[in-house]
Image (cartoon, rainbow, N blue to C red; front, side):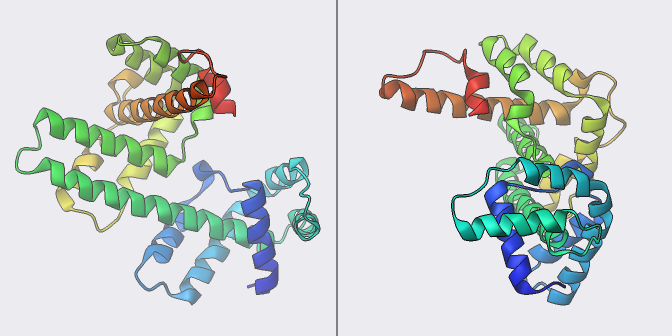
Length: 275
């Protein structure tokens, strides 16, 4: 692996710029890396080898987009950070998938996935506590849908900004969730992203309570429904994403209103997401 100094500098650049490999393009080697990182006592040699595998798989595809993203990044005021960014731009021009920038991005992908896996395990453990001996109870079903939805949002790293118009429309519907929810999931759920959601859930392998994990995976089984409104997994994910986004926007507006500089309601939800 490259010198630790170069890796440390590239980690700093990634933290400054938010640069990352898109979650949707990561292959199975990234999940293997995440599992290795998340193990109780990770083997450093194994982790390093998997980092190189992830970089080998992703850098030929993503070198151009990563270089373009760095070129658009704001130049930092700190001289040392600015030098690190300049070095990162040099590495971005290097086709070698084992250059420090590519390796640091691969490492970041594994760390982020490992954190998502850990949160999924926590949610499954909490879900097991609600299921009890009667998993068909209404409150247990709501807990299942919420846990599954949050796991999907996390594993896919869904960004509310990408769905701002659809979430705004959902928020404007007020209490008419019966009509708003199908409209939301149909507007956001193309076949590709819904298939990806199912693959992510079915591939989830964490030491969670078996019944809770099986219940969530059952929502991902079978072919992708032709109508997104019939896709219970995608519906759960989008309702969680929308409701959490609305709660966030409401809290931000309430804080701004207390200072006298915010409009009432959620008409500016898209602007809040952009901010």
